[in-house]
Length: 256
Image (tube, rainbow, N blue to C red; front, side, top):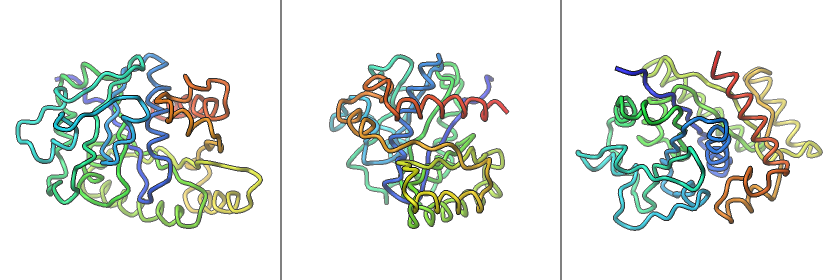
């Protein structure tokens, strides 16, 4: 049996923290370095497909079929994207979260297949902000979790709520899961609240856990509008620079 594929979970209990922006752009950064990346969109908003220009028609297989179809197979649902080395397991935008059942190991079992580790080097999972079986499946399958947050008091509280969930998962179900770091999003160094919240994060979780942030950049939103990662849409922008730096940093952290 081959070694199970590595899984990076992108999560925050609060919506609007930039999870999908991080998921799509990190997937493309890692792919640019030669890794074969599978991006899984567990958030039923389905925005990963939007950011990569993948059209998902009604009735087509999605990752959410995992919770309702007994014969579901992960590789049957994988879609190729226009970005080399990036594949997408898209979301069902009509999926109702009360249908996700109680089995928290479904994704783990699906990703443990030899065929998955033979085809992909890294899986990135974009998660919903809800605390339900979708999020728990991602965390139970994860190797690492990266927590993006906006430097805002409500987002800080969302991070603290998520950390309580993470400690429970690590102690009871997935002891190998590691918190890779906390990532400030839409950072503006001249905004006092941003500095204050980031200082709180550092005091709460430690200097090494709070990563260099992604600066405010309209090019990140424009890139989604053009269905491209920011490295392709605006390669000289702040957003492209920040995600390149972040991917290099995470590569080093994941190799430890």
